[in-house]
Image 1 (cartoon, chains in turn purple, green, yellow, brown):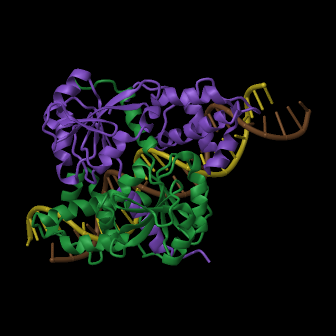
Image 2 (cartoon, rainbow over the protein chains, first blue to last red):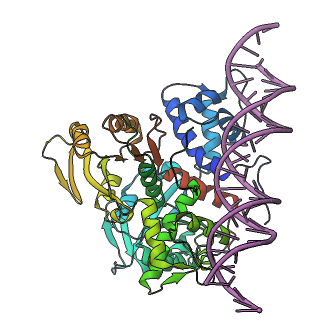
Length: 220
Length: 220
DNA sequence: TAGATTGTTAATCGATTAACAATC
DNA sequence: TAGATTGTTAATCGATTAACAATC
C-alpha cells in the first residue's frame, strides 16, 4: 500500500538479486588490482544485458559512473555494500540443528553478506547450557523467545523438517523476528509485516530436471 | 530461437518453480486422507492468485479438473511428478566435499525430487579408493570425467569455493554434464546447451537484509 | 435450476531491452 | 574532435490478474 521512503530511483526485486553477483565480481576485480570498470565489460562477463547493468548500477551508485572510464571500483563496491546493508551486521538465530542446520552454522561465509548467526536451537536439546557443535552451541527451543527478545534479533533461519516448519515459524514471529529465511520445502503463513525468503531447493531441481527432460542429449 | 517440442500449453519459468510447492502441499493433503482439491482452496492456503493456480494446474494436469469438485488429488500429484520428471531419477555427481557438500551428501531428501547423487569428488582426496564420509564416498577429482562418461551422468552439483568453481564447471562440461546446480557465489560461463541453476544464497540474504533496512521495526 | 468451479481470452502490470541525447 | 561510455525515456516482452463463458 504505502510506499516505503526510498531513494528517487527504485529497484526491482530481480535487480536486487543481481547486486550480490555484481558485488562478488567487483571484489574479485579489485583484488586483481583494477581500479575502475565499465558497465559493458561487466555485462559481457556476467552474460547480462548492457543496459540492465547500467540501470542497476545507476540505481545504487552514490557518485555514478563517468563516460569513457566507467565506475570507480572501490566506490561502486562500497555503494553496493551500503545499499544491501552489508556494513551493518544483522544478527540471526537458527532453528533446526540437523544436517543442513549444522552445515549453515559451520559455514563461515555469511558474515561477508552482513548476517551473523548468534545462536542455534533444536527441540531435541534439553540441557539449558546447550550442546556444542561445530560452529557454536545449540540450545533448547524453550529458550528461543527469551533470547530473541533480549538480544533484539530480527532474522530467523528455519532448517527444521517440513512438518514442523510452520510451528517454528509461529514461534519466531512471536519472538519478534521480522525476516525469515526458510529452508523447509513448505509455504509458511505469516503476518503481513514479516518477510519470508524461501530457499527453495526443490524449485531449483524442478528447473534442472525439466530442462534435461525437454532437451535430451543436445551434446553430440 | 527454435521452440522445443512442448505440449500445446507452455509454462513459464515462474510457474515451474511453483510446481514443487503445489506438489508438497498436495502430498500433505493426500496423507491427511483427502481425495480431491479445488484451485481456490490451494490459492488461499499458499497465498497465490486463484487464476494463477488454475492456469498452472491446467498446464500440467492430464485429466484436468472438474467444475464444482475440483481436481482428483492423486491424479494431480502424479501429473506434476510426471511433468517435473520426478518419476525418472536423474543421477548426479557432486564436486566439493566441504561443509556444504557433505551436508548435501548426507541429506536424504533429494530422491523424492527425482535426483540421486551417485558419487562425490574433491581435489583434496588422493586415494583412488576414495574416503568414506557420512552419506557416501568421496573420490579424487582425477576420476571425475571417466566416471561421468561411463555412468552417463547429466547433472553436476558444485559446492567448491568461489575461486575454483569455474574450473570445476569446465571439467563437468568436458565430462558430458548437461545441467549444473551451482552453490558457489559466482557466475559460471558455460556453452549454450548447458543449463546452470544458481542456488544463490547471497541473493536471498540481500532481499532479507534490504527489507529489514527499509522497514525498521514495524512491530509495535 | 443455482452455484461453485474450470479453462481461456483480454487487460494490466512489471521488468527487460532498444534508442538516443549528454558527457568526458 | 571522435569515440566510448553514461543515464534516461520509450518500446517490447513476459507474467500476472481480471473478466467471462462453459460445465457439472
